Length: 151
Image (cartoon, rainbow, N blue to C red; front, side, top):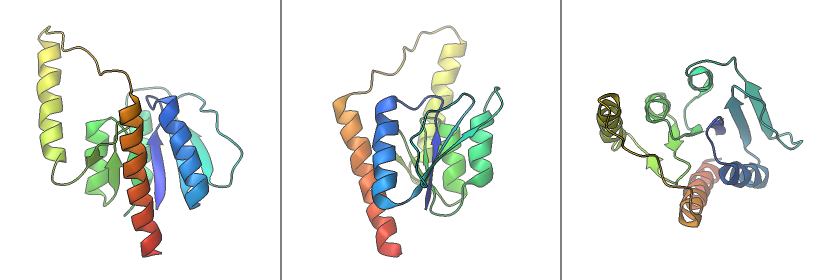
């Protein structure tokens, strides 16, 4: 298992959780962004910088993701592509996207996009809460434990 992070929009608190988990579980963690991402010196933690532009980080992640890899993203289409390639997808708020729920998430995303395009203000997401951080850490631990059992 490798962990791929859509790092352009990933909250700092989630990055910190991921760094600690990667070190503890000895799993390669790669941040992908169109700007520099400061990372600690570690044999498990890497960063890939892509050219600025629409979906550059997403395309880079999809190019490399493989079976049982984890993609951390709030981007529903990226999550869907990761699942289609046999990986897992986890939102920074701790929602595990699966083949059972991703189609509904895509439909809702498209609906909200249509509302915004018609001029309706749908608001943005709430700030990341402590509950969100705990949910994320819990789901990440479950996935890493499952991976450790398979080794």
